[in-house]
Image (cartoon, rainbow, N blue to C red; front, side):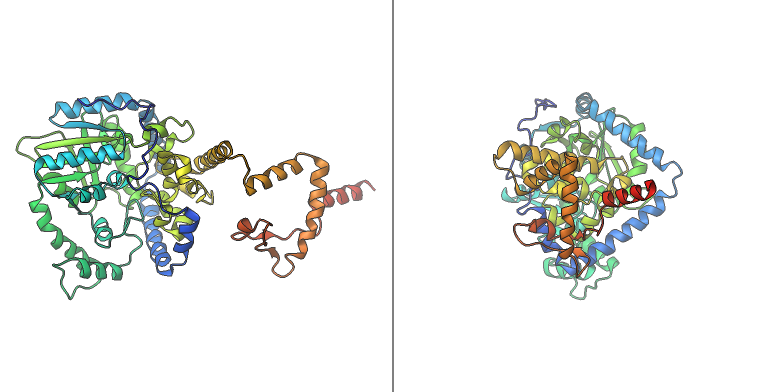
Length: 497
């Protein structure tokens, strides 16, 4: 048995740099600005997210006890995270007892090496893959390619992204930023067996993908999957999906390798019942997933005869150590928060620079990498609270965003002697507001700002050095002719006279 990872004492404490897909090349504001200029992208995202929201609202509305179900999911996740070390050991014991092999990976680099060695031991140079966020996170496909191993994505959306030499932009629907005309062009360009007369009808495109993948399914000797859930009491792993490609990968090859984040555990089958009601409604807007595949170790003569489970840390114990941030590990990857987020709908997933976009990515990625490596993400939110209302396990993302913003400020303050322009302005504002006479004078002096907003009724972008960066994306209300304090004083004098 491999040496287990000691929870709470990760080595290294966060996901390593240069490996995987948790860090972008640009900060969110810069990347988002480019995305906002892409009209086609915004149209694609707007249509897709509105459709998913409507479907979700319909099926959630059918459940009388939906809020109670959400609370049950939250409590189960909190309990599991509080007892994670015990449940992980239980899972390993049960997987091993049923013929599987468990590997512990401290980080992305170690996980990639484990998987690569297992594939090479089979003599294969090609694998088929079930859609997996964990393998995207560690950059497994890129690593395998560098080792001469081809990883074939079999999920339709993941296949579109792969053939388009693109990156996923959504947790559930990786190709949400593409419309069907764009997909047709990708298939015609990249599929050698594509019909030249291929149309952009969804059923026709799906048929072309099915034909393209059929030989891969039948010839592959190794498959790689993630896991939506791992059940500690029996060592069972589970994948839920909508297309059937996952079922093909999980049953046909001789060897199955599953990469699972250590937070994906549930203690028992009874607990799983809660999440199998929450997940499909929150993700695809379905009452249940069309394909729910569960497997426990190895069954002689049925399915893969060699099963390996790679338990991935990659910064998760660092997240677990943060009392105010650890609830990010409760995420069941439904993507409901992305579909209701006004920032995500306009900027798209690529702007976040991480395989985890949207509100959950804005709190999870900075914690996995260390706040300074993704310092702009906690600010990629209007704090409207829609993500919390939609989350099936009630993760308080807005509060977590504020916590991470504060952590970034404190980290910056500790590492830099000179304050930023923003912190200097805030310090000055605090000084003014801390004294009644100073505040009264400031309020009266603010009336001079009325001259700046006389044309539009608001104060627009200000020149340097007057907060040009802040006002470049925000309008400031034009100060009123009379402050509240002056109005109150006048009313009080009128009543007493």
